[in-house]
Length: 232
Ligand SMILES: Cc1cc2nc3c(=O)[nH]c(=O)nc-3n(C[C@H](O)[C@H](O)[C@H](O)COP(=O)(O)OP(=O)(O)OC[C@H]3O[C@@H](n4cnc5c(N)ncnc54)[C@H](O)[C@@H]3O)c2cc1C
Image (tube, rainbow, N blue to C red; front, side, top):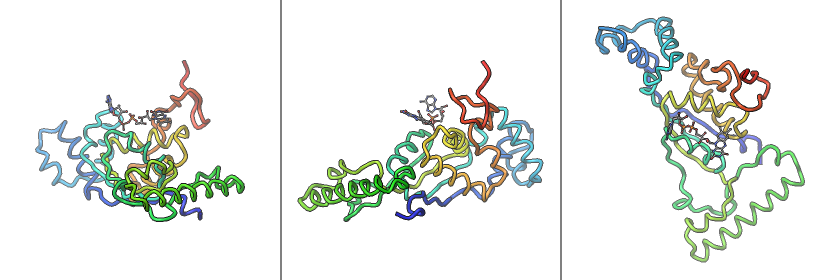
């Protein structure tokens, strides 16, 4: 399997055009006698908007960023990875179904780098996947529905999904899944999601970081070394 095949493929397919102005309008409305329509139409300069937004976010007034919804098209991720992602309750998902989409021949699967670089184990890993694919095909050819044959498909099976979330959840997702305690594949996936978003909205960079960078300390039992744990 090539390196590229082992990486999530991510595209930001939807985000509001006026993200900053929308959040600014939400923030400013809380403290202004002016109407939200006037605030929005004034087209305030970026520096002023960012100053207020930064103050509002650091004071924990997060409802103001819930107005922003972003959507990602994601493919080439393992079921192990998507199982972790779907634990995030403020996200919305549409995932490739293993009931309606029957695997044909060798199904696509991901290989963790630790296995990839061990030649002997990698061979056994691939043999195992072939056996699973052969048995899956044998079952479906004998009339077992895909929804039942899928019981033997491993966590490594490749999946794809469309995932949407608001900016509050995006920041939370980044904060906990970019932490080195998160598993490699989901960390990489979330890194790619953050990169796609900050490419278009660079002002978000200080927020889409591991939680220690926002807290100023590591709240895990053991630090990876990036930040010291909180003094008790
Ligand atoms: C390093 C790591 C290891 C993990 N290990 C395990 C594991 O071994 N086993 C396991 O089962 N899971 C594990 N998880 C998953 C974890 O427990 C969470 O289910 C997952 O990270 C979603 O996080 P969340 O609940 O903070 O976020 P979301 O579901 O995205 O929710 C965001 C925030 O909304 C609030 N919220 C959401 N729902 C509620 C609610 N019902 N009540 C109150 N507040 C709510 C909370 O403040 C929450 O932080 C692990 C996660 C990480 C990052």
